[in-house]
Length: 634
Image (cartoon, rainbow, N blue to C red; front, side, top):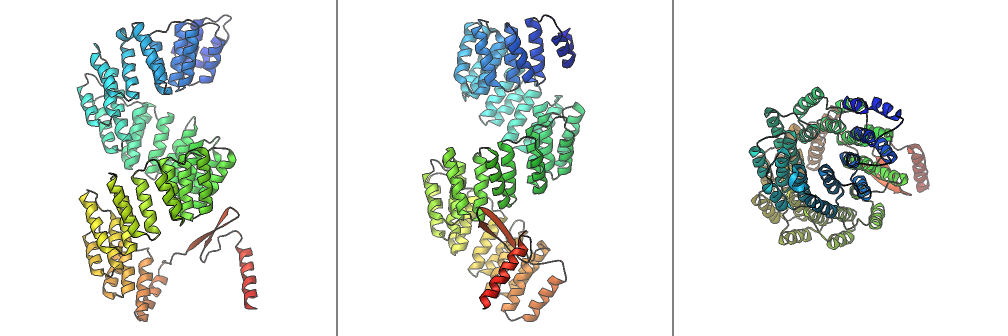
């Protein structure tokens, strides 16, 4: 009766019947443990496992399989050890589950011992499932050749065998080879397609992942949970709302939309497509919300700059983990609300949560932008205490923070003591030298980078052009601008802006304007603003008027063009024209942006905005300023 209720999916009735049994056999225990594990009710399953007075191979295997299914791999290893201590001999299914558990736990030595047991017990030759699990084991160990050898020596291969081989190619980065395996498969299922879709999505080939999903549907395969999650993530990367909505509709039709993994992917997709309302609706209708769902929506609001909503949701979370804190702190940092990022970091420490590398990356970014050397040094001390100072991510963030805070010696020290450096590390140091006025040293460091064999990226060249711009190194800028294109890196709008700035600062205004007219997009407002600013310096009214007109066409709400043109007219003595521009600004909704300053007092940051009394102590501050003004007049 218990097993019949379980087969019907009525676990509650099965449990009531089981609890009412005067005598329970190992078979009934096995049935209930297996059902509870499959339903994710692990705590109840463990309770029954511990109550069972004796165990059979089926009982132990069901428990091991349940732990593996719920990704509690170390628990599975413990059950296997107890199984052996009870002198219960494992079967082929036990071996398969245990290899999966060892892979999940990273216990590759134990896995190889279990393989030896399988060979000794003749499970390896007789069980295709054991052979398939061995392919996966070798793959996770990084031994693709051994995995391929097992596949080639198999007398019989099923769809799982072929999918495992497909994963061998995918893991090694040979996605073309993986596709050839997929095409050669005598039979394909949703796991085969899903594996390749997931690998393309993980490697940033979002468009190819979506294309494969369409081909899978045409092949007659039904997407599974993993496939839905991967293709929705691909749509999120592409900001493909229409495609994502179609996949959402299919997941609803198949009853998969309430799955926690699919739901999180849907939330992420809608947020990336600027549809936070739809993401919130999905979140609100979830029957069960785990911490990943909460984090996904907080991240989505942060991505869209809605930090008030993100913090409101963050405060409502029933529980928070490291990822939760990282999400809110990085959200503030990415939205340039650096003071709030540091406040959240302090709250994190007060909660007892230990920060990680991602946390410090955001915190150090905030310190760098606030030029808060004291807070940055405190964060540095914590990284040393936690033993993560030498991480390439932390080292890069520390070097950048010190450079932006004006402590170039500490920045260099961090850079040179790093055990390894990547292109981001080199770029940050090149940028740091440039920002601190060491343009020529910045160029020398770039040459050192090239000498190590490190390949520069578009950001490296942007830092280099910035150095040339602020160092007045016109010919060097032209050289590196050409070199960038020779290396196959297409200049972006910011590169053109830097080049225009270099030429304009040197008074080569006609060349700067000609370069702007040749840009692929001809739409970078900042480039025209840089040219207009230089026209003000060199009093070139003709080019200035053309630049101002173009700037106004590109950014009608931008006040910079009006202000620069008005200032240039004033410096040239054209007072009527200057007044006309100011009157034009007043006649519209345009207003010059106000400045903002920060000050740190007793560990707390205070922000002040020009012409706006936003500080909560504005009245008290004004009273003290009035008193100081009065005393200074005596």
